[in-house]
Image (cartoon, rainbow, N blue to C red; front, side, top):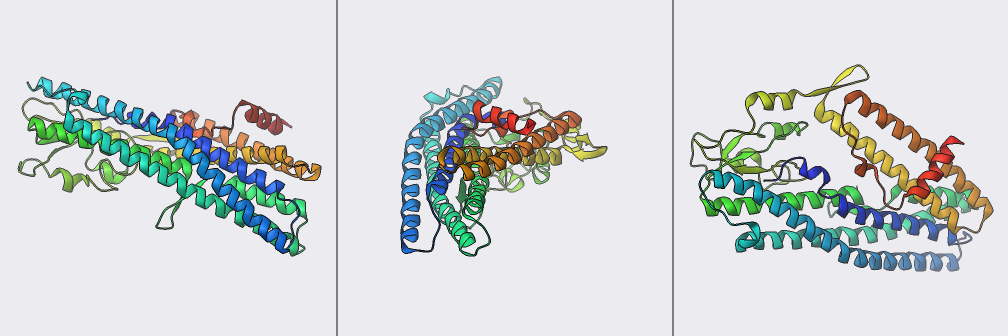
Length: 398
């Protein structure tokens, strides 16, 4: 079993690595945009554009290859930590029931599950990164094409066209394109893939121990702010075999094994062994009702805790997006040799700095009124460091 709060911080180190890739991609796209040169409809411009986009794809693929060597190590450390923690909690319950399950590293079957989970998630993260490389190449092509069209139409001069293209690239950041056509920001996709992989692997290890110990009953964990469709089964006892008429079927009731169910996409729930007559439920009905009915106050309104967490996530995403914009404009100002373009990008930097300050103040006010905890790691964009932050603060003050 993994406690719900484990998932709040489990992927942070890995996300830092992929945030670095995200920020690098944004800066590289912007740098190439401002260095492309004059915009025209000649064959030379078309050839240069395609050459630049090809170079961009090669560069990103190289950086992905460098990054995944490091991220594989982080995936391994993350999974081993999760596996050990999940097993140790369950072992305490088994030992209280008079059983003697081995530690994780002494269980060959459990270690095989752990190794398979690590390999699957590491491979999935690499696939997401390579998808990002292709999407970013198209982003560059679209941005320079838009700049070309704006200049040719006579609607914009060169500086304005490039500034608009830089703004588009900076706002877009690194994205992942799924086979369904759905797009996600890289950090969102990485967090989902990592936490889901950790959760499912830990759950499979718990299942293997339950099989070995002959344990049929399990209890799901519970936490405030659970999704409405997860509230119906959190903190309850289920039968894995469906042969205990007193208890509902585990898989059918919780959706375990599906993306939308227990241990699925972004799910913070887990489960642990339960022995009738020996175990006491960790979540009495009064506690579950408190979780389900928990609310916060914001601007004079009563808001369900779950809805408040979604509002906080949205505010954090906006802050990250604005930091990516600032990193992009900063890269553009450093890369261009045109004073006019540098001044134009500086104006955009100042506007985004003011927006970031406003977003932070709004989040501060929200957290102050609701009493919810700040999760600063969800606001971070690696590469937006102290230097960029100081520039942004100074620009906002001006």
